Length: 70
Ligand code: SF4
Image (cartoon, rainbow, N blue to C red):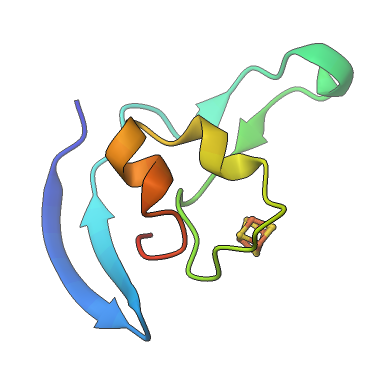
């Protein structure tokens, strides 16, 4: 469970600070030669039309709103 603690606007994006369950993750697939991966944030402020990362949003609404939240 991720809890939002605070948020503020950055351009058109809403930036929220959250507690993460984990910081380091074991990589899989084509990057499994590495020991760990680190994703210090999720979301994006740009929302490029060709972006595949939006598909990994936590829910459909956040996917539709890609580019407006970090
Ligand atoms: S919308 Fe996607 S491709 Fe564009 S900057 Fe953000 S993460 Fe990168």
